[in-house]
Length: 169
Image (cartoon, rainbow, N blue to C red; front, side, top):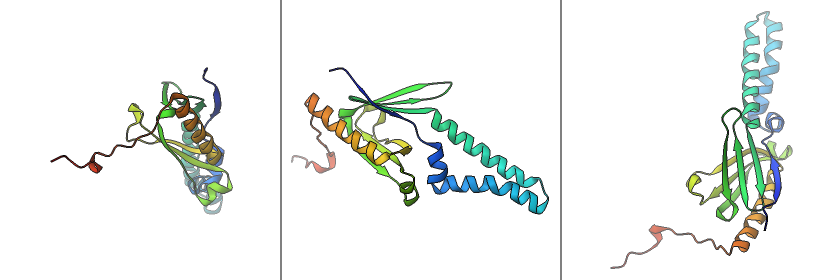
């Protein structure tokens, strides 16, 4: 079976700006600087706006530097602009997929997808995909693909907890 590309997406800067408290804060600071500069006749308030603008641009670059791709067999994370890296998680190794979102996130249909896997490069470190548009639907899609890939490979998930095993006397 050939590997098929199912979905490709990035984190959304626009949705982060208007769908999160932090985003609203930076937009507010950006707009407040010129208003305060006019009211108090001081150009120093423009510095506050400049800092906010830089923060928004940095977030945009961070989101543009990461692209997520879901295939029928893998989750692929492309990172970087100048120095690039590619991280892959085989879907049959995915242990859990969850979505976190606030009330404001729900209004703008975004969320953070957390992928926990048994992949050796990510052991104990969840893979975070922040501010993803349609996160709940993408989580369900990913969950279904994980199940399909496990069935295709004949893989069963077994959790082993050393503390739960009684030592033999």
